[in-house]
Image (cartoon, rainbow, N blue to C red; front, side, top):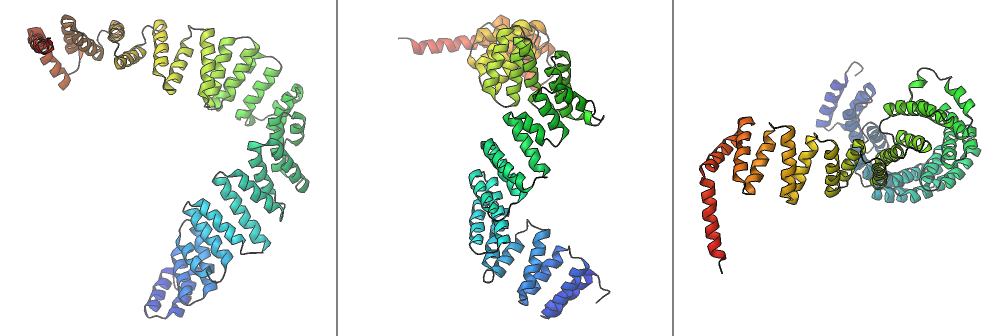
Length: 471
């Protein structure tokens, strides 16, 4: 069979199976597998044939190979469960846990991992299983249970990745605990760059900049720690040694801004903040840095305005609102801050406050048709006819050919029984509106208004209603 292809071997194997010659079929499948060990169809047939012949160890081997190639396909897991059930309870529960994991039943997977632990005394198996339990707890957001599992692993093995996982979990809640676990890790892995970088990060976050400098691995953390200690000359010496490629990194611009802030060069500070913002527009840091510069120079408006932007990017709308209102109070004629307040109140679903600032805006930006139309829509909803008409008149004065506004003016005038005014605006609408079914309907209405038919119909209705309301 040495000259056969995979396809030919599979065809021959199938013929043997049809004749119930399973041993020969099995040999053909093995040959096909040797030709292409990544073909999952061959592996599946080979594993199935092994099960039929009760070569269970081989079947387990091949189903595990299938699982490695197609880990999301449940067929290998279900077959392995049958094979492990009587022979290997540890592997049975491990396989069942993995199956539940790919099915998204993570809490149940944890239960099976724990059952697997109860069925083994092998240290390597225990470490591997506890690691999977810990990772699963992290995914389902149970950090304290994950911490317990990682700590149990340390009873068996001082594993660097376990220390780092523990430190990461502690870091969110208790930086001192994270620091403690990393110092323990450093005793076992004194040359670990990952551990040192994490230590540097924690010392920067907790304000111990001298220790941050000691553990800094990359140049950016090194310079940051120097700047935070006001070691400005050492910092700029390193910054000026950067290559052209390094100088395109957002962190370079941020550090240059910090350097100039330290030496009180506000112009260059703001310039580098802008350069940083261009490379990372979603970051809240540029707004925070600007706010600090403007606080130092007693520019209240810009300070509050930038703190507001900072909190917007941090998704803290309440603090952003406080800062924006402070900025508005410092400069109530700023169109920019009024627009930001309109956007923020809209995001907070406060229509009345948004409308209030829309009114402030159109007093300054008198030709802002979009905001005027927004006010029309708001006051229509509230039923304030006088306000609606005022803003519609304002729009028509800016653009006397805005047929949508002319139509609204006509409709509101008609509603308020100002027939002559309604006719005037309907005529203007017909003059400027493009051809449409609506325009034809308005033409018909206009004819009835000008002929007095609508007025007569309304008068008759008034009489009928009046008859029924007489006492």
